[in-house]
Image (cartoon, rainbow, N blue to C red):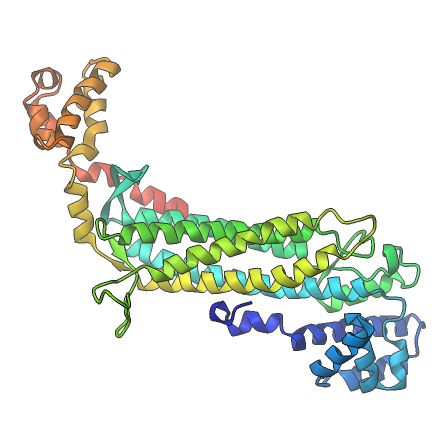
Length: 433
């Protein structure tokens, strides 16, 4: 985790203090259940809660113990015994380390998912606001980076709104799939811990029960979670790339806000660079990079090994913290995006009517011209427009083969920009309801 790309609320989920607090709660809830089952004295469970509930765990002390025992959970329970006293002998009764570690990771990922869902909601709100603001603002649509046909800037933003609506749904699904507890003891057989303990801990930690845990929670759940983060990151990069292209000097239809006192270059005072969306692009690459290790964690040896452990210590915090930062940055960029409708219109006119070529093609076919011939007639005039020999409408009017099928007065009607935006309301109803 790099502090430069981290926000406090998400970072706090992965702090040692937060982790050890969750570990304690898992152990204490397990003690409660075992006390009810008569496995340990009820007074012991009460003392564990009383002494540990408000305790400030000494991170340095836990680290020192771990350096000696070479085991993080033992280091924690040893330190907890220093806080709780003799009753600490009833902590971790029948549990194995993975019961604590995996259930804790589920809690952390679930909490992280809640923040990410809220982040997407913030981005969706910004996209919706700006989409309606520019709902009918004409702009050129591009395919292969080349002018295609007119659309509106609002429709362009609506496509991202629809995409991030799907992203939100995927995050909700990923959260539900990862929100599971496993308190099943060595190799997951419940030989040393009653299944009712797992039920109690899961309920207390607001998790579901893993049906069969084999000592660990199966990592296909985690792979699905991190894969979802990767897809969300890919959508972020698509949004960022669009804005970066629109900000290019030759296009300049929209650009990131440029704050007072901001400097774009150490050597060129005129520069206004798309640094925020470039940053989002880079962060998205990092989030996606964590997907492959998560997928490779699925195939563990037999009932368990710990080859996944070191991976998750990286990707758990880094993927969620990075995506959290990128989503918030994207929402801010969209909210403050500077839009240039006049430049959009100038760019629409730049190809001197070429963007209406399909309407001419269709009109010719409807007038009885074979499609192949119609295509040839339009293209030969369009190529002359590309070569700078005149506007497409003028060239078509002067083409006797064209006007024989479609009179000049009818050709003029085919260059109406409103034709391309007549179904914007339908699109918006589909997207926004």
